Image (tube, rainbow, N blue to C red; front, side, top):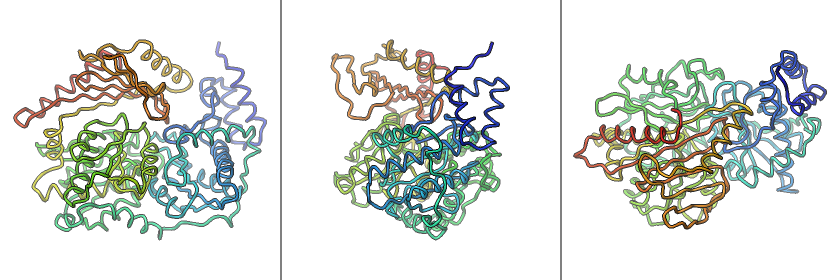
Length: 580
C-alpha cells in the first residue's frame, strides 16, 4: 500500500489552505488524489537551498520546486538580509534572465518583491547573459543582483543566482545568512509581492556596448585578428542568450566569417533541437559540428542558455573535428593568456591564476613554469570570484577557469564568462593559424612540455529524497572504507574537505586545509593520479573526477599515450565500483 509521510502531507496542506493561486492548488490536489506520493514527496520533502550555483530546481508547485512563491520567499529573504547588512544606506540591485521557460515571469516576480521592499531595481528589459549581469552590478554600483537561470540543466529546471556587491555569487557565510532570513518567513503572506514601478530603472540595449567594450579590452593579441579576419567560426547559443552577444562582439573584433546555426539562434526554453542545452554533451554540439563540416570551419563554439559556459571543437591531425573537454580548453586558454602576458613583458611575479580543486593540475604546472601563483578553490566559480575580489589591487589576475567549461579572462566580471571566452578562443585560433598551427597541435605541445594529463568526469544522477539518501550513503562509505590503492598505485594522500584535513598516509601527519567546509573527498596516489568525489550543489548528482598523467616525448605516439591513460581511468572506475 502506498503511503505518504504525514509531515510532507502537512506541508502540502499549508499550500492548499494558504494564499496561493488556484492553478498551484489544483496541481497539488491532483498529486494527492492520484496518489502520486513520490512526486508529492519530492516537491515538499525539503526547502530549496543555495548551493554552489544558487537556488536551482525543477519547476512546479512545492517548497522544493522553483515557482513564484519559492522565488518570492528567496527574494524576501534576500531583501531582509540586504537591509540588515546595509542599514540606512541606499540599496539597489540588478536583475536579468535567460531564455528558459518562466524566466521572464520569475524575473518580474523578483523585481516586484525588491521594489515592494523599497529597493531600487535595474532591470534588463530582455534576456541577457549571466556575465553581463555580473558586470552590471559593479558598473551600476549595486549592492546585489539576481540572475534567473538554471544554466545548462534540462528544460524542466529553472533557478536563481544571487550576487553580492562585487558581482560575485554569494558565498558562505552570506549565502547561509540569506537562507536563515528565508527560513524566518513562515508564511507566503510575509512576502511583499506588490511592486513599485517608480523604483524600476530599465536597462536597454544601449548598455550592451559598455559590456562589449569591457570584454574587448581583455583581448590579448588584437593585431592577429586583422591578419586572420576571414577565420571561419561556427557558433551556436543552443537557443540561449549567447545569440545576443557572441556574434555581434566577434564581428566587432573584426572577424568577418561568423557562421551561426540558425535553428538554434531562436530563444526557446524548450530547447527543441537538443536533449540537454549543455555544451558538455556531444549531442548538443551535433548541429554545430555538421555546419562546421559543411563550411570547413576553423573552430566551433557553443554556449549554454545563460552564456557562462562554452564548449569547442577543433580539427585534429587528421583534419577531423574533435570536441575538447573543459580541462583541455582551459589548458589552451591558460597557456595562451600567460604566454601573451610574457610576450608583452607584463609578468613581474605578482600575477596569479585561479582554478578549482577538481580542475586539471596541468594548469598548476603551466602557471609554475611562468612563475605565476595558482590558487585552488572549492568547486563553483563564486569561490574563484571571491579570490579575485580579495586580491584586487594586491595581486594581478590573469585568468581563471574550471573543468565544467567556465572561464574568465580579465576582471571585468566576477563570474565565468562565455562571451569573453569566445573572443579569446577565436583570437587564439587566429594566432595559431597565423603561425601555421592548429589549436590541437598547440594542445599537444602543452602536453609534450608539461606532461600528458587525461581527465574524466562521471556523474551519477539520483533523483528525489531517496536519491539524496543514496548519495549520502556513498560518501559515508568512501569515508569509512577509503581505497588503499587506485589502479595499482598506492594512495598516499587523502583530502577531506568536510573535516578540512589533508592526511599524509605515508608519514601519518595531517595538515589543515585552508578552504571552507565542503563535502568533497580527494584521493591522490604516488604517481599523481587523483580521484575526487563530490555531491553536486545544484543538481541531484554525485560526481567523480578522475585525473591521470604521464610524461610524454615527441618521439612517442600521442594517440597511444592517450589510449593508455584512458584505459587507466577505466581501471580506476572499475576498482572503485563506479558505473560509467
